[in-house]
Image (tube, rainbow, N blue to C red):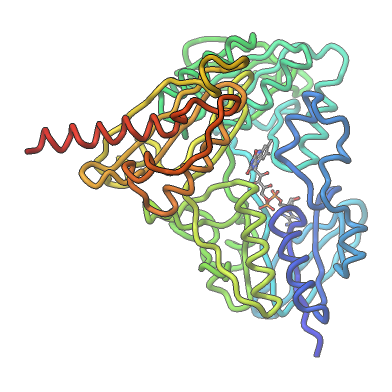
Length: 459
Ligand SMILES: Cc1cc2nc3c(=O)[nH]c(=O)nc-3n(C[C@H](O)[C@H](O)[C@H](O)COP(=O)(O)OP(=O)(O)OC[C@H]3O[C@@H](n4cnc5c(N)ncnc54)[C@H](O)[C@@H]3O)c2cc1C
């Protein structure tokens, strides 16, 4: 008898799972439900499309529904799965552009529902003109709003990386932009000293940054449209458009209602093969939690890089192969105005919460040999375990050519290397690419000295 796989969500995780499963088992019936207007798109590219660096929405789509169909996947667009019945092994769906509704039986089910933007519980947060950005359709709606005549002022609530990327895109469009955040520095996943440099770069771009000031309400006009953002310190920030940049939470509604167990961090609990605890039910992407390889904790890290890999792993396993997702170490990269910023491993705060005792070291250097034309400033910070010197975390910030250096450090952390081992690495060198001591090696040297000094203090 032909087996049927039903996939809920047709972007990074769902699209990868469906494609892999079908490729591995060409006899498998695969039905993929997507409530939006696009499949396999790059949400990561939305800020660059809004800002004009990318010309068209079509460029953000890696695989259209037609391409998926050509590969043997029965794609149901603008169709939302509204419930999962694990006993009868069916999903219930409804069409969003018509009255159609029905049931689809499954042998295996993949939940790849992604995440939803966080909304602070303040009055006016659901008003018209308040935009979360998660799926491509959100990007389309926001871009339309920003293009409306008379739109001049944008307030971004929350200084996470998505909020800042959108803020920059709005600034590039010539709009007045304010970002408001309750923390003292933006992008809380970086240490505050790195966050302060990000704040400087944002301000240099002409974006107003209001920090340490929580939003208390969104004021709404008589038509029900957002008109200003109010803060605890008494600021009234006029807004034609409000964007939420507070991060996201996993969309686990279907899983929770169906009785698929969630994990300690609120994402769907999965094992390394992306199996949930419910028989024949798999999950992947932003909606699941992963194992952090350093802290040992279960964490929700909503990144496309994980969603694609996890979807692939689920698809291989469903298609009869064997694959595992080995966990995450918190590697992330972004471009904030003129600066590139990246991190891997644990931040100082995360290391403390995970119970590590550590030292930190930070160095300023240049992206190329100091004398070479175009050399730009770069700062590398390292967090190393006391005594053992194991590299626990790293953060890199600087001008063009800085941030991708994080990948070398991610490999070091993945392989549990000490800063002593890192500083001896055979890394490449020529003046157009780095100083003779690459900034990551200088940082490792300084971190090694900090570990040594700390040990001397213990003797
Ligand atoms: C502006 C922005 C910038 C980003 N930049 C980066 C970056 O630089 N690097 C990086 O690694 N990550 C980045 N991300 C994160 C990345 O886009 C996500 O981690 C990734 O898209 C998650 O993929 P997913 O398939 O798990 O979920 P999603 O992409 O959210 O896809 C889930 C899909 O499921 C559909 N769906 C949900 N529920 C149902 C239902 N009940 N029925 C039918 N369909 C349903 C949704 O419509 C959606 O299309 C960015 C995200 C945004 C929004």
